[in-house]
Amino acid sequence: MSVMNAAFDPLYGEAWTLEQTRSMLDLPGTYLVAGRVGDEMAGFGLIRSIAGEAELLLLGVLPSTRRKGFGRLILQRCIDVAARSGSDTMFLEVREGNEAIALYKGAYFEQYNCRPDYYVGRDGQRRSALSFKRAIQK
Image 1: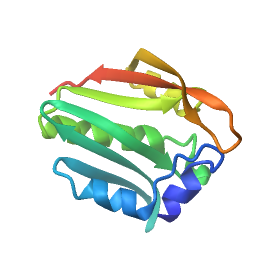
Image 2 (image 1 turned 180 degrees about the vertical axis):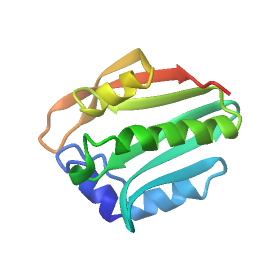
Image 3 (image 1 turned 90 degrees about the vertical axis):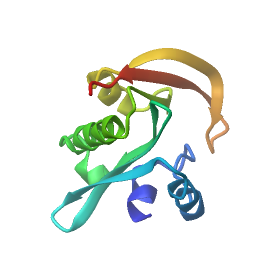
Image 4 (image 1 turned 45 degrees about the horizontal axis):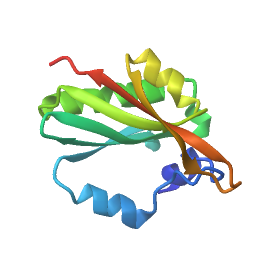
């Protein structure tokens, strides 16, 4: 949970609680992918794969490890896990303006939908939810 809390800016309220994370991990087809630097966790990805489709639920890396390729490696491992679980498509949703959009586009995710004013930050500002997807090669 220390990585969860450090990875997500509290302004946006995107970090999950311990209970939310535990309850998701109890569901069938849910996988946690951890990225480490030595003995320390640097980031993680949380996916759910069911009925041929996967969703990237969360991807977070410590601020100190950003822009060093860890997010890209964790994302690729999530895609690989989804492929091994039988998924042929991966979906994700991201807040408009999130720096991770460049990461997702670089990994061949394409935007297919926008939900205007979906998220409300702790500052009261509304931001759109952008939906992305990509095919998974098996």
